[in-house]
Length: 514
Image: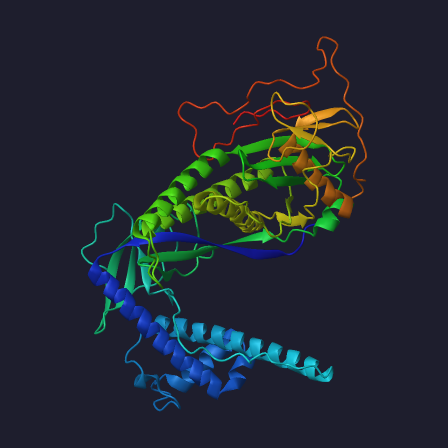
């Protein structure tokens, strides 16, 4: 039985292409927004009972205290002392920003007081400082209905409308242009802006697309649009695995070598339904190591790194952009693979600390960022999967690459042409001497990850060998599997993160064209 429906939110980010004059207007609008929000925060501090009201009631109370109208010509704390003739939606956006900051501060202060009382009750020394109200305000500007308008590419209008309500649909926002009402320092003007990035999904309704927000990152401005969709709340992993026999899970083994991720779809009985190898690790390491090597050479050439100033700004930006793009692509493919096979649970390893090997700057930096990339892939996969109604779990990573998924015995990990003995970290093949089984090492690790979750919540008993499937009469058993690569074939050069299959076809490996 599915849980109650709830709203899942993710943010669509689009870069704003603007002129220098428009950048000054952005700064002026954000400065005014933070001044008004700081003013309303002081009003809330002077009237703390407002926080006990609902959001709508608090909005009404604050407007009655600050906004002058015909029915209320003399408010207690007039907003006119800060700014004159603010748009109503701009004022309400600042009120909500102040309410959010006030609620956060109140909750933090209450938790600090509880910790202090607990320490005093135990007669322990308590040295933690109390939280303080925001000293500076640097909030991003939210544009409510009436502060923005969309415009289609083919529409030719004589001039932007000054007044109007929010459109009934967001088809106009699907184009790379938008109208925002900005403060120039003297007056409010409508400004047409061009956007760069993915458009909003087709058919997105006003209930799904929230109010856009203008965010500054570095020297660029971005437009963030929250997208909401109502989905059924997924049940807990224990409930799905113990009560629903048709549940499938997707176990993911993240690596830093050839395959960035290896995914296996497993049933509650531990049967592997499908396997997918997401490649691109070697090329990613090469591109990153090239940039790190150039950074190291530039540092040796200068010999001095300025204090408080970032060196090699463009090359570091390339390294960050490469990792960011890789994390998004891999996480998207993991979720798409889980959806295609009906998996409702994703399983990862709970990785701990990482100590890079000694070596050059580029080698150590490459290994550290490869490890950090695995954590980023997990975070991105978790929120993308949750938006699709898929929950994410983690298991103990101890010896997931050193034991066999079926019998639990210690395995030998080796490369092509090497003897099937010992353990070589990063080698692609594995051999279990206990049950005479061979498989791809990363695929075996993925199976171990999935079966550890099954052993925790389900009825599957880990390390229980399953009977081998009978071989066909016309085919002879292949002890080592074929040695031909099963990489995905495509018309051109594969992308950095080509989602091919493994470099070896072991027995039981699922075959799937991509």
